[in-house]
Image (cartoon, rainbow, N blue to C red; front, top):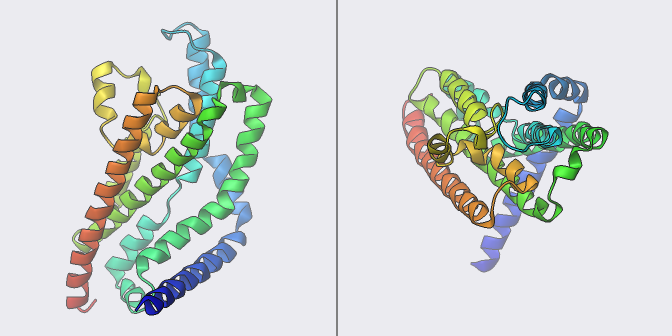
Length: 273
């Protein structure tokens, strides 16, 4: 039995590696498009200039340097690119048009297909993004705002944020089993993520009561939390609480998405789509 179980796991890993290699090869043919996407995703950089201008004009309370906001929004730019997700619309379309049936017949669960798709995207995107990020940090001297001892924890928070975002996108995609279009929900989700995740306004600038409510939602743990950890903006207790909430959201969203997927595919196959 143990040998059979090990063989199944090995076969599954081999299939997943094949999917990852396939999508990596596919994405590598479009490097120029990735550069365009990276340059086009300049919303955090626009916010950088706005907040630096507000700070230098004295419009903000608190003792903040321009380097603080430069570092913050450069990191937000990096985290947003690490968290770029493209598969929700594909899952929505596959469910509505019946193309999901073909994936359900394959020996690999469609979930691993979407995961490989996103990881392959990151393999191409992240190295290109790092060139822009490191160049910006060095050119502005904003790297001095980083707390080096916190970088391993920031990486862990980033991976947790990516997992939260992936499961949230998978959950939204599964809603297509019961809804005609889920893209409206996806747009609302992304708007809330930018606003409440710290991409437009750093969470610490919200009123205390509002900030406390925001930190109970999943959005800060997708974008702002890894940045705050990297810059040392949080105490040890706040970091621990943040990681606990992040794990809670990953577990809750992941289990709900799995439950909806199981229910949805039963009805989907029963309808003969």
